[in-house]
Length: 495
Figure 1 (cartoon, helix red, strand yellow):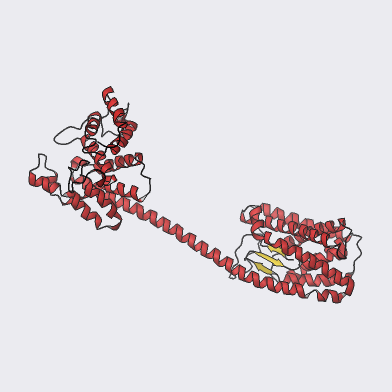
Figure 2 (cartoon, rainbow, N blue to C red):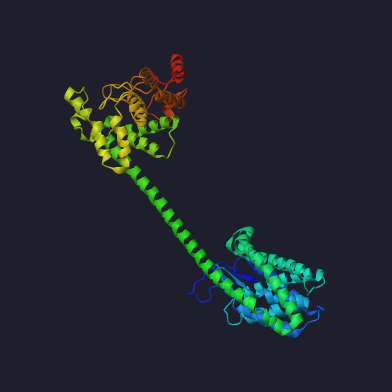
């Protein structure tokens, strides 16, 4: 069955390059392997020259010619390995003449097949050495059984010797591939060579049959058995041509698909960053319009997402993004409110309050016109609703209010209370927390309040936020308020 040869360096097949593989590999480990295999092959040839085996030179020359032809018409294996039927005459020569036959057939076959085919010398040398080492292993197995020729006693030793030959030869070639491609030896062997094992065993039996036919019929026996290997070669070529084409097409398609996936992922990430940057720029512009709320939207969005996390909203989901964008853009509708109302330092008239209360609906209409922001628009529309149904604009109550809006109300109220205004100083965090607790079940969703309390304790308990956030003024909570937090955290859902 086939002998496998493989490019010992990872150079792609490129017909536009004139023998790109002529340069020996640079990898020192690969050079060492090629050198050891080649030297071992030469040593075995010398040893074969001193072998006492009786040689029928006519049949050995015939087998050598067949080996040369098999090498000249080897087959490509997936574009990076090659396989030939030279194993059959080489194996037959070992059965007939032992190491002496091997020492003649392999060198002559490699020299004859290498003339004019453009194959680099170092590859031919490696292939020669691998064949000699594998052939020597074959000769040892057959010698252990007394060099049997006849059926059926020779069948078992021949199959065993064929398996040993396959294991040695394929392992050497797989080692060269593994080194040159930086791949695990076992993975290379299983991918490229494991499937060839049954073929080797069958070819070993065929080689034995050729020897038996020669013993019975002379040269005509060899001629009779040339037909099966030739037909085998044709069928293998047809199979490999089709398989190679399919494998290479699949690899090419996989590579293109992977590249497209990477490009799409990068594009989506870039698009997401662009979306986020655009939204934050818009929010910064809106906050800058109202000097009293500078940074308010960013802070509220960050606190909203901390509470959402506490409530178990999974990060990087559509729900997560919609809540984040809704919180960030909650005041986008104020773009339609005149400056004299938005910046008025004193109390607003009823008509001015009516204009102010219109900003959730205006924001909703703005966001629904943008496809990817449409889900977040529901949060913007409902961010001034109250849990008890006394909010605006639609007087929603309880779970009629989107979860993101129920979470946002608490973050928005807390940030507003702990921020300075023209008409008042900021509340202490303790006072703002007490106000949130008082309104649990009326203005705020109790479940969201409990989640806020958990976040609050992580951020405020026993420390001053002056180190991390100068916006808020924190003090050690009073024992009564700590008790109130503990009680609120244990409340059942509901007012």
